[in-house]
Image 1: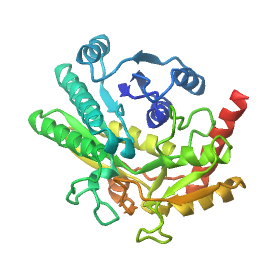
Image 2: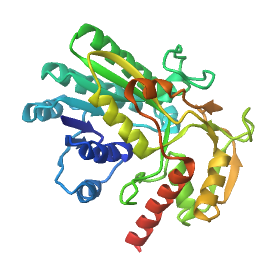
Image 3: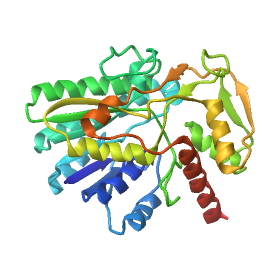
Image 4: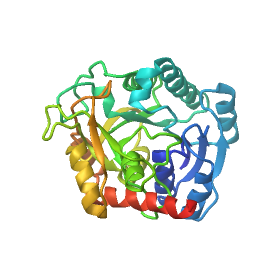
Length: 334
């Protein structure tokens, strides 16, 4: 298939580009580089051994997106492009609503206009709100606790309505949990611009000495050790889930959780990282972060039964690969 990957220079997008090309698909990447780097494209080309067609495009801009569709005969789209930090979304809700909703509508509109019938959407477990874990696809979605989650839930509804109104249009809504890890080469991984918003890049940056101390947001949740519990999934497992989703996508709406099916607390993850890599990670407990919930992990049986996909890599592998990527960055910048 000929597939457009929006946000393909980002963390999950770049790993999915590797998985797609490994599976024999042709990929075009569109990314505005707001939270990624142009150097990632050259690195991807090195990993996969072939050129990648890249366009520096903001997919909220309708004319730019139409031009992409005019120049290519896409069979499908995987839509990652969007702002993704829970805490930032609480502070800057308008920015999140404008960017994430408009980008989804612009890309979906182009799909309909140009006869592209496969649309895989990067959704999130945040759409479940403060439901009781494990989260399963058929449960009622609660109002989410942050604007980021609301943009995902609203985008899902937009795409569901589009699928109902367009008989040959197929959409796969992938609700995934907490991606960490990196490609086994150590050449691509999570490399945010500025201060990290996610846990693992903070852990690796503290471990490498770039930052003095990790902040753990809250130790008074109703969990095994008081810290928040999340379903951490290796980014390459997640990438392979996207390949399975687009390869098996047909008309209508399809919803899948992509997670491991078990939860790990923040303090357990720190301990696992220290054990896997034989390095200490200094941390301190601070107040809870606005918009966070206590426990979040997947019921992942549907993806196994319908897509034949399961997460294969364990927490130890996630921690080792994350640290491998961080140490690669250190040697390249010294």
